[in-house]
Length: 294
Image 1 (cartoon, rainbow, N blue to C red):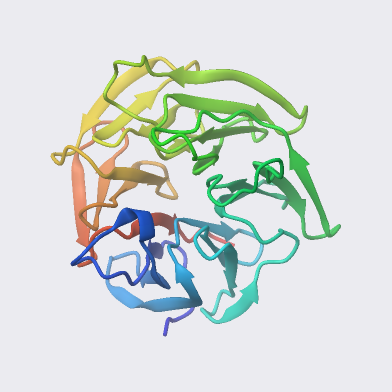
Image 2 (tube, one colour):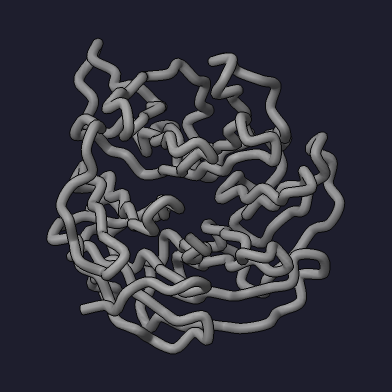
């Protein structure tokens, strides 16, 4: 059970997996989101009722409802602000959705996590733009790079400071891609790693001043608005750093290690460590959301 969401609370995707004998090809468990207060004290947990792996979280700022994306079960589960489960999210088709965010005008975008299970000649859209008020959903044509394994689509998303440019990646890929949601057109990549670069693209986060943070597996980068590297942060562990979320005031960021089950809160400018949260479960920490002011 969980209590009502309050400003500054942290919600952490942490599926209840068996981490004693991990097979990432068939990695699943009971869908779960852990709930912590702004002081990192446990406040409960949310259960999706699905078996899979929750990999992305998004909060609708209009009512503080939470959406938990589970591509394994092909579901997006909605939780009301009081922590109660209100069933599957409307509008979206049953698909391997793994990333979602809300736009300032109330619309939302959702990204297909991977191409696994697609029948030949029947490709699912990679990106959707939806509007609850009008009950509409639109499929958008976007580029992907497949990630390191070749089958990933849109695994992590962020909205740039202009409020219209979607930043997105294919997990462990080479490109930090951009798409103009208003003009419905692909933009040049913000960043592209060389093929010999050991870093990969994971979770991006956009600051209000135009800069961008990007998790790279072994650490993170702070980029300017043109994609130039300003700083490089290393976090001690050589792999697993995949999810990155800015705090509400953007002075700090939360970065999650999927392999170790470790969530670190660090200074945005210096990378200095402020807090460590160990969720006591490996191979499941896959999404972080901080509850905003309504």
